[in-house]
Image (cartoon, rainbow, N blue to C red; front, side, top):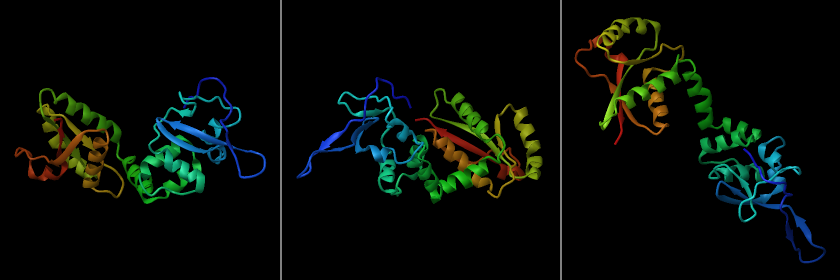
Length: 245
């Protein structure tokens, strides 16, 4: 994150108690991507080494909006839960993945660690992603599927991509003949597996659907239904249907 502009000391609001001399309270107004927040300098500096602590150090060069508020050029939708944690160590109960990404962005390491222990993040980071790391060329295959689907989408409402999923080396050997037939017929097939992990074929298919949908595509899958495919191959081939409009 870049905070250009000229140097600016932290903006202080003067508080007037009932008696005694005026007391200066280090309150700051923030504009985070258009979302407005009010907090204190000590709150923003609470985690040493974080981006916020660095931004609001005494030597910071601040960027101000038209109203004189400190401006952070980053979406502010989920900044509130990060601020709540800095204020009172309160953990969010909603939008956990989004807050997790914000905690990573601002390098709030204690919050990152606490969120990684929640079921949502633990399941994604430790279980699902660790499984997918054991599936050869998983990310590359997702990209290939999207390219094939887009190539067939011209003047069409939907397009399909043929996928082969094999969990073991034995299954891969069994499917070799079918893959040669598809290659001879000039039909593109995206092959996943084999892998050495507990999840089953349906788990892999659900991951593929989830990750493609996360890119904004409307996609479904079903068994490949062509009658020309021999019964012994039926459980290994699937059609992913992309809906365009």
